[in-house]
Image (cartoon, rainbow, N blue to C red):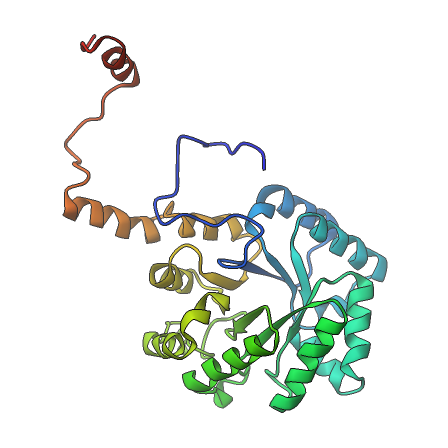
Length: 295
């Protein structure tokens, strides 16, 4: 990684951020139709802060094959895991054995696959076999728990139990359904507010495996909630492609929403006095060299 613009001047104001390649604290972005040049531009600016690149729902179906393959090669070169949305797998299962889907995904250049039952009911025994199918194809299985229909939302206990089972069967990460709206789904109410008691229950059941979860959190207020609760290295998904650096600023306390908690704590503890003027660099150097303040 090349030198950052503010290296040794500005540092994270929160707990240390894990660097790539990451197993925890992953950022999963949602792509619903970016071209090759746009993708190159995004990677030029933010590749160090992107871990998973999801081609939302069935959007990759409508891309030129050669163009998609070139885009997937580009993302792989930047150490970004790529996968089509879980809905595409659900559609494929209506007509094919999962092996057909996995083989084709691998041949196209995808490095992972999302396994979900957000729309299509899939029994748990079949879900286990689909995870095995992905592993056999050389793909990283990433599962998603939850339903897309607001009227069919599972309980927090059900979400947590299925997540634990998926991880036991070989899933590398489990995504908590939040859709691209973040409203009326999973742990979010109809206005996009986080139902804290639902999150607490999932944490209680999942226990030490909590770091393997990726919370779909498209709204800033949701991202702030999870960062405050779990720290900078919480897995977050469905991030807009123009908000990658903005999210990284939140993770590191370089934005009001997560910096304010840090400064409030410093002020309450007396660790920073707003009335105390810092010494000039020249004066500090003079003291260190002679022990006498020079002006």
